[in-house]
Length: 252
Image (cartoon, rainbow, N blue to C red; front, top):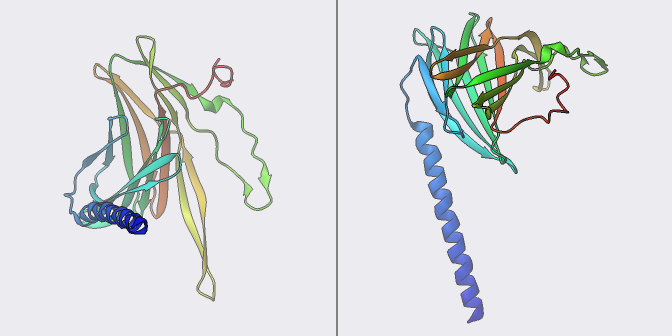
């Protein structure tokens, strides 16, 4: 009798798990096959309820997929938009929002240009309120470019800097903002069918636009492409200080 009760509990638990898995798969499937209309401007909801705006100058954006992946202390939401010019697919933009369990989150953006034509896009992050800001420029810190025996010299530099946004002396947002990194894929194919893929950094651009008006502050990061390349940037957003004062030596 006791064994029957145990088996009933096990079977009920398995049934609940199957129902939950079925619900999860249906959600993914519905999103996968949904057709979205192309648009000149799209918006994406962020963990702090802010809307991230995405535009591709002269191109149309069409959402294709949105997926989630859970890690131990974070969760990724990745959304992909195809880029069209006169009905021709020029590439895509992938936006990954990585939410950490302390409330901070990263925004990783990648423009993949599959054409030989140059193009550009922007992501805009609005901060509402009667705010003021201070940008700590990391370019003031000298970098020692050391040689690595495998990869050679790493030419990359520091991120653009740390943006502090306050309202009435209260911290509203802390942002670490990257540069715009443009790379090209170098592929070597082997006789056995295998291949090696590495990426060569072709440019690193320090581009950032801060626009303040009576609504608040808008942080805009560009993605530049010259053709057949990948253009990327990232930002880290927090409502708490990202550094202790005595740890940030560049804050003079």
